[in-house]
Image (cartoon, rainbow, N blue to C red):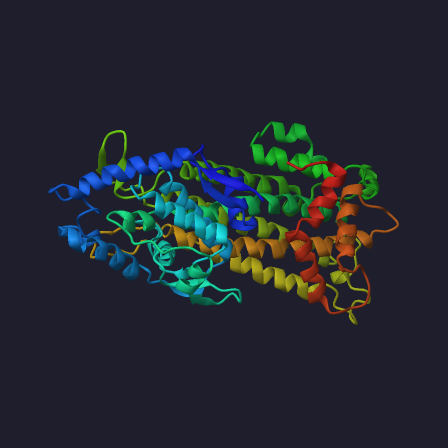
Length: 515
């Protein structure tokens, strides 16, 4: 079992994925424990001082002007967390919650939040015991951090609130913590704010989206190659010299992938002679595949650079500047940097889905498919073939276009106009997850369609790499040409082969790792 150590350097994306998705353990290294001790000592000093310090001896947000007496400060922390744990909607996915908890723990372990070591240790214990707080869909505006989602986590640290039970439903946190030997924390001054002031939820979802989108872009290249091949398109437009003169890195990588996937195709060889093909140019959805998938790749690369900087950041307000010996208010909790790239990725996801659907539709249209039967049906008129599979694909593409409308351009003031501009980054992340889920489905329909079209080109044989993709689908129960049958089962099998990496692994076994 992987163990991720906090305090020994910056977290990597792989660390986040290991904890969020694979259940990796976490531990606080000696550097983290030292930083926690030094940060807490400064907070205790300020708490004892007669001068008010925001978040330590005052109220919060629009109520920050009130100085809180020492005997009320423990109640202040409890009240903060209880009142802010105000989420509604369905419980979000456990991997999102585990990423959220890890992101906050990473910041706590820096010492710059001023919490006691026991707070960080208890949060680590939740992750290691597999205790997942029940975080709700709605409640974050993406400014002052993901307040409500993080408050639901903090409430569990206090032994209150709800966790996800073994049946996937919410259950009371106290008995679950007791069963795992985890002692609830009595929060001290500053600790309530430190637990809820971060961009952790939206950042965790961004990191997972970057990983997922990167894999789907390889699938998009495989689907494009299969569609080009099935429609007797040309691979000349993917040659490296044409992309060297427009050197966007993603475009160059996508074109190179297409050339490798289409290598040694008998279908492609059958019409290389100009006399055997009466087309001057292929349609844009075929010819411009690297330009679209490449632009998406470059967008993912930009998002990764932003996510990397955010992962290395300390997000809290106020923040403890240990070396300077002071605590300062700041605006680093504003989620705009993360929200923007989440929205950028949703735009790219919608466009990659759109061009894949257009390639699919061409294979089904007898007037544009260059010799393939209508809808790839066995007996057109009696059989409908893949007609309605394209309907489903079109519905998903339409939804992705709606999901591409940016959340980050919206802002709703809150907290009596103190928090008068917010990022909506959590919302951007939630819709991006849906968009990428839809994209996987859209690409799986293209693969299913192209695989059937390639079979129909027999006796001509496809490239070894595309043949491997077809074989991977067939092994999963995705049938070839033939009379109409219950199609949803095969579509879902194709989707699963995309999601679990079976198609990609089959192709890369031939081509080597794709870019």
